[in-house]
Amino acid sequence: MAPRISSGEEASLLGNRFLEMEGENVVYTLDEALSAMKFGKYQGLVLAYAGLGWISEAMEIMILSFVGPEVKSQWKLSSGQESALSIVVFFGMLIGAYSWGIISDKYGRRKCFFSIGAVTSGAGLLSAFSPNYISLVISRCLVGVGLGGGPVYFTWFLEFVPVSYRGTWMVVFSTFWTAGTIFEASLAWIVMTKLNWRWLLAFSSIPSFALLFFYALAPESPRYLCMKGRTIDAHQILEKISLVNRANLPPGVLVSYDRTARQKEESSSAQDALPLSVTAKMTRKFKSSFSSFFMLFSPKLIWTTLLLWVLFFASAFAYYGVVLLTSKLSSGEIKCGSTVLHKEKSNDNSLYVDVFITSLAELPGLLLSAIIVDKIGRKFSMIVMFILACAFLLPLVSHQSGTLTTALLFGARMCVTGTITVGSIYAPEIYPTSMRNTGYGVANGAGKIGGMVCPLVAVGLVMGCHQTAAVILFEVVIALAIASVLLSKFETKGKALTDNVDALDP
Image (tube, rainbow, N blue to C red; front, side, top):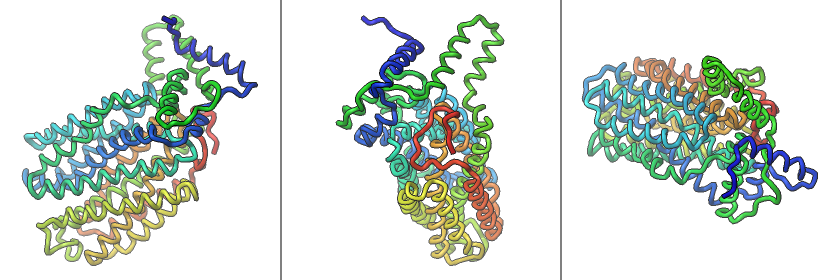
């Protein structure tokens, strides 16, 4: 049996081979390998698994539109207690987004998947058996913690896609979220009219259990492996991609072009070998574990990080506002004259019909973003769709007919969905591999804060018969999002992913 070598020795050997063969042009990078093999069946399988993760998240989020009113009626809850059911999910997602991002950047993308699926599915099923309000709040908060791992699926798939296909295929990936929202609206329409909210919670946890079932088939990200100096492991995955896609790898040896990161890792390993006190070791381990988080506030990234937080907060605020606004205007709870979409049918299926119709709005939103994202760039695409969203929402400053209101909310959701889709592509493209999930996860967490605030502020205004103020608030928040995009100095259209902060180029 061949002797086992450490990752440091492996990096050193590959570095020597790189120096020996660089002049003969017999080495290739990960991006060159992915471009040579193009997007094939292997990436399709990765897309299916990651997409299932996003379907699970979308269903658990959309369920808030249906379970809240039913639980409120059955358990005689106040409006504040009903809103808390949504808020705790977003609070859990905020915790999860930070935690899973740091863990996945430190220990790998794949290692998170089983834990994410276990937390989401287990808590989701337990919530269906909640005996009282407190237990339901706790279980839904735990569901949120699991859902906070959604960005890990997104960046994992992103790291398998060749640069020339990235914009289009990341939009395709976003269709899984839309599929989840449409499926949940359809499921609620069937289950809630014949059974009850407990059955809906139970059925909605099935995709999360499926993630556990297929976990063994999920490979680690080769880009993450290269960043960690595990080039041999990355090459083995590339060989599998080559076999499944029936495409040849470039001639030569795979190398990590990020030699700076490798040198830092080797230096860190050498320092760890020196005798240190227990306190010093604990301090170093803490700094190492959260180094990706601290790098978000480095001089080169702090401005971009803050702008992304504003962008994601505003996008989520607008998105969940439109979703919850539709459910509130359709539920018959509001007694403000013409504000209710279906005053005469408040006890029928109008809630499910309107939520289903506006969920379909995400399909043209995805199509629009797919058409323009690689043609006019990420930043300009978001600006165009934000402006359109403002235009659709503006007529709602005054009360409109039920049909026109539904149509305007349809258009607004279409455009906001498009901006979230492009923003979700843009953020992980900006950050290097060593901190990609942390950066995207933290930005996504800022979006969850927007989701938490929205039911308390905007929807609260509508419930208090202040629809005009709510719409003006939406317009102001979207204007802040446009400003954040304009001020951002990075445009990632057509650019390769980077592995370290020093390689970032506006």
